[in-house]
Image (cartoon, rainbow, N blue to C red; front, side):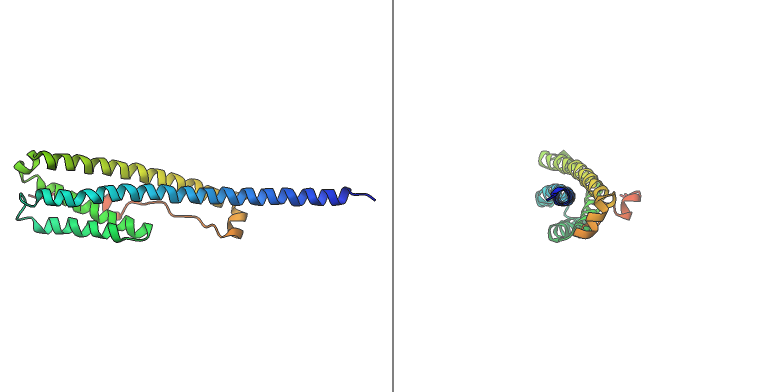
Length: 185
C-alpha cells in the first residue's frame, strides 16, 4: 500500500494550517499593537487633563475677569475625560488644545501670573504633555500603518477578509489645526 498521497495531503493540510495560523497571529498582533499605542495616546491626554484643574485653581485669583476662558478650558477637559471612542477623544482633544491656546494668550495679559512659580511649572508640565501626546500620536499612526499593511498586502488581505480585520484610520489633526490662531489683546 502506497502512503505517499496520504502523506502529501497531510503535509499540505499542516502547511495550510501553519500559514493560516501565522497570518491570523500576525494580523492580531498588529491590531493589538495599534490598541496599545492608542492607550499611550490616551495616557498622555489623561496626564494633560489631570494638570488642568491645578492650572485653573492657580490662575483663578489672577484672572477674575476671564471666567469665560477658564470655563471653556474646564468644559473642554470634561469632554476629553468623557469621550469614549478614538474619534470622539481626538475631537475633544482638539477642543482642549484650542481652549489651552486661548488660555495661554489671555494669560499673557497678567505679568504677575506669568511670574508665579507654580503657574510657570504647570505650564512647563502642560508643554511637556503636548510633546508627549505628539510622540504618542506618531507611534499610534505608525502602528496603524503597519497594521494596514498587514491587512492590505498579499496574502494578509485574503486572511483579513476571512477573519474580519479591516483597515483603520490614522489620527488626523482637526481642520482647525491648519488655521493660524488669532490672538487679540
